[in-house]
Amino acid sequence: MFLRQSTVGREPLAIAMSGVRMGERLLQIGMDTPVVSGLLAAKPGLSGESAMVVPDDATAVSAKRAAENAGALVNIRVDALDALPFDRQAFDLVVVHNREGQLANLGDTRTRALQECRRVLRPGGRIIVIDKGTPSGLAAIFQSRKGPEARALTVETLEAAGFRSVRPLGDRDGFSFVEGIKAGGSD
Image (cartoon, rainbow, N blue to C red):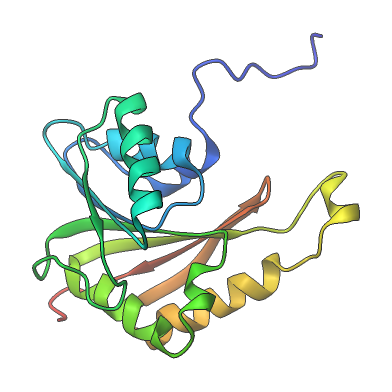
């Protein structure tokens, strides 16, 4: 018992790794885990802005419920990821939920979707892509090890979309995090 670490008051890993802060303008693309999406939506608070683009109405309903449970105000849109319905430089941070492989499912439009994310970011803004990570513990025995391949594809695609300083942030608990920056003064 004395060896256990307390988890009371800790944020889920995906929330902490995103680095979203109060007052920021946040855009989430897709949704893998409703609880994580709701908690992320709540982080900017009333002084910030939170928006989400999802692929279908069923996901929008789930996202709305998650945001309500987290006490978040969020603008949820059902739209194509390669033509985001927002103005240029409208957001400080974009979080792409990609654990279910939605970027890979876009095929040829994957780079275009990430270019759209870049377009709606302010200069110096960040993108965080949450991928499926390397399985650990017992899960490593029973699951395939697609984390490193997904991470490499994400890095390559972010660079092709024009992001700078693209780097993996970490791989833990079945999550992989990759960050990119929109260079200052760029489109």
